Length: 215
Image 1 (cartoon, rainbow, N blue to C red):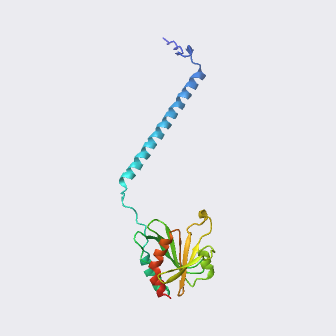
Image 2 (cartoon, rainbow, N blue to C red; image 1 turned 90 degrees about the vertical axis):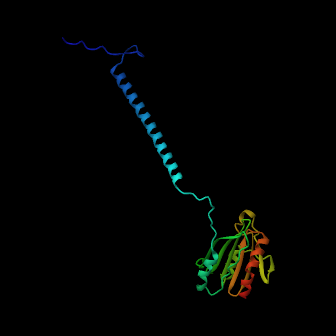
């Protein structure tokens, strides 16, 4: 006996059976919602995996609570350079709390004047750059002080320095508020920076014996 065909299912919301188009639309919408949920789930899972990986790296990488010492051993650098340089390089004994953050021999490729350079940081975190140029010309000297003229002279432990002050607005001065420059032998010595006059005098006093010995 042949079974009678089943009557189409009545959809409660419609109060009647779905048309073929409505059935296709419903299935397409259900498929879209499924894919959207799967995408969100995958994103959440990826985020959790990433966070777990970062936490693992943080836990495994060793950490040192001690501050990094970035002080430069300019004394050793000067000792390595000295055999190749005729002029005796100034190697100051720094006051307590002072450090050097750079030290190098500048070959003079851009200004044609070679020089020994030390970047000094004072106890109150101000800056003084020291340069000892060999056979410096007026152009080099003018470049160091941005063509300013000396405003005074000062004698510190037997060494007479020309005093320079930057006349530019404070915002345009960079690392040059004031400077001391003197010459002995074939060397021109320049102290340029933002530190106080007292700090300039302190480091100039440390350098005085070496400069005097070169006269």
